[in-house]
Image (cartoon, rainbow, N blue to C red; front, top):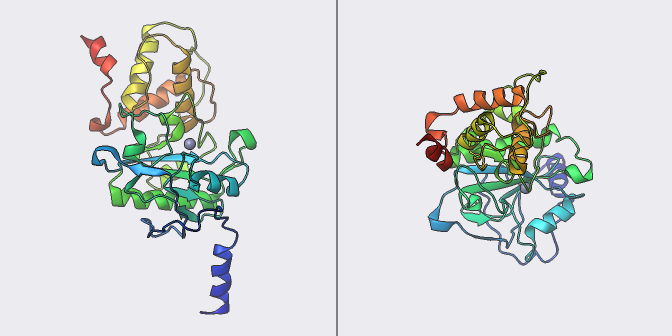
Length: 290
Ligand SMILES: [Zn+2]
């Protein structure tokens, strides 16, 4: 080994803050060949009914430093974990084997599925998040997320429209990874379903308090894409939260929970570019059609 490569190796492994109490845990071979480290987390269970993962959920850690995030995700008793953590320098740490059910999504729903943890792989991206200044995601980190997702998609046959944000599956509770996350860059590399957002223009909007057929149509369109939204025809609090989640992912220039023309146009462009079998039939839509 040359001195140069020793230097590189020690740099790679320097300052990875393994939580105390983790030393005795049984390690495992990472599922992803680009994971550089394994820090086993005790916080996982079995996937229910032998489910295999067909979805990827992206998160940010939302903590002031990486030490705290690793401790949170890899220490017994916190009841949270993820399969992978992607550091700001692009290093990828695996914490839970992909075959197991990590505890990352919490109470969530997507396309009628309420046990998101059993059918997904959770990736935590180190970023302080909205409560701590919400820095940009470094390109090196974004590139690592892309490479990690591409590997999982290939190995697990995860389709692009099944790569989602935590905010998509838990819109009332979560904002991560948030409107700064460069979904367009991921899409350029074949990760995630995305269309260019329609430009923001002046015009009529749907918003909190409105009751109309247009609101029902909006709710149906969101549900057909996969969002968990009640189809009531009333623009209520949950509808506002789902529209904001949609905007964070697909129309990030303005996240206000108001369905303007740009939001509606972008939603319909996404729906019409989904593979037909991916369009969800919401139960309420079936009732409404009778
Ligand atoms: Zn999250």
